[in-house]
Image (cartoon, rainbow, N blue to C red; front, side):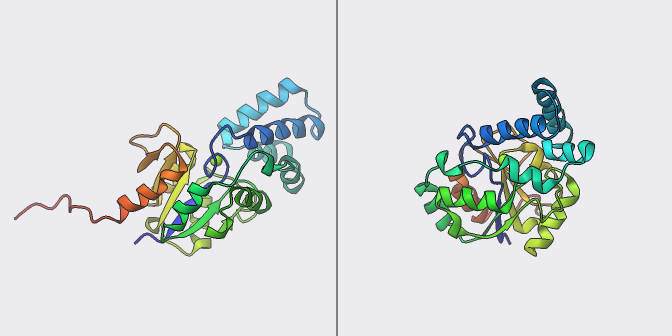
Length: 220
Ligand SMILES: [Mg+2]
């Protein structure tokens, strides 16, 4: 039985191009230039390389530059989230109607998640926020942190739906039997559902709740 609806935060609960992640990316580059003494080209090249290799810039910076994760996280999330995001009444109603526990799982900090959820006007729906500190600064898609999520939620894989804008972050979840939902991306055949906007999650939950015809059972 499905018990948990787990959402990634950035570019999932609000649409890509809202300005938040553009600003975070700008701050990441500024961090690399200011704190690590890189020039702009070097910073951009390394950021792309670390994203490709590890899924986040932070993972690469921790590994190769031994940064202080708390200093980095404070620096790159120092932005006025409310300037980019507005209350989303439709999402509020969709979440209200879904009778599952809801959680956020983010590669960012709890404080950033709180600010985003407040700006969207949907904070009240979420009973848990799992952040990068809960994962000892290891970010998705490192496969070994996915069981930790389940441990924190006290749930089994098949009891959870994971909603993400990143196909790469969904793959390890599927391995654990979680139901995977990709928002605004190309992932047909690799995930269980693809939706265009997060507000469509209500339809996915409904589809999962409907009795499905037994498959693979043949008359004897
Ligand atoms: Mg995301």
